Image: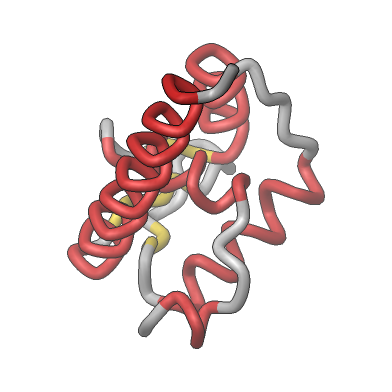
Length: 104
């Protein structure tokens, strides 16, 4: 699935994929970890809405329940999507830095 098919690749989705790149996590664990590395506090509605979209896209997959908690893992397609998005963000950041260096 492409980014166009997925729709807008939102910040919550990016943060979730980054979190899951470190290994499987359940929702609350993702919310805590995302807050720790990004300073962004995702609410449950935002988190679970993004999880549903990412799962539908095939970028994450649920794992068996662990004491009433549902962990998720990054799929190979999700890893490729994350790598592609990070390359794009890197290009954007380099362009911005270059332009800022020339700004008065």
